[in-house]
Image (cartoon, rainbow, N blue to C red; front, side, top):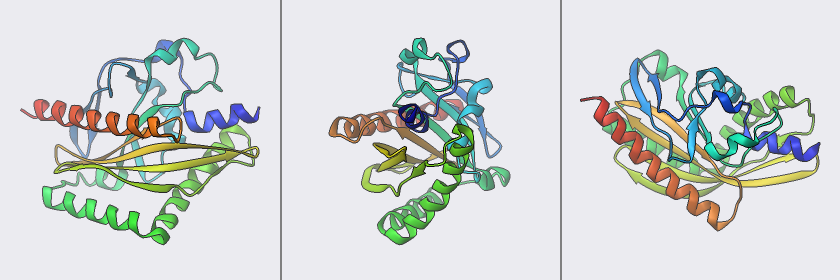
Length: 235
């Protein structure tokens, strides 16, 4: 049971095979239509009918736009305790969304600078992460009826890459339950898409070098696809 609970925390998957879709995720960000293609052919978007199942992994100040899971995992989805190691979420700040806030190149640079400063300041980073982690942990405890779930302080692993419209960094995250701690490397990406700021998160399954390489490759490839897709749709 403890292993099942821990898998549930890391996987965030409550979907049936018949509800998943391989198409792009077409959504709205700050009043502007945005296209989020799958990271690659191995992943599919869960669709609007199942996207709510991922809401408990999203802080209340953000809105979930899209969720992607591995296509080859579908045959193994048998109940709500099933999970997978790799998945992606795309989110948007509710505040920026409500105000239809435009993000210029200059303002994006300031956002990235602020993020770098936060990553370099352990006290500020820990405070920010602790607030979000407590909220997510509370949701998970209610969902899984477990009282010993905790999300430990993540360790920043540094910048993966940076462009004029994207900034990606890696984190080593740990989740503890039932006396068992599982660690995985995840990536966070700030993206300027059609003058809107969105956040893309890539969740890995392990904390080894192979996982880091997969995270970095997937993040860069996905960012390029997202920016290309929205550049075409804007014309």
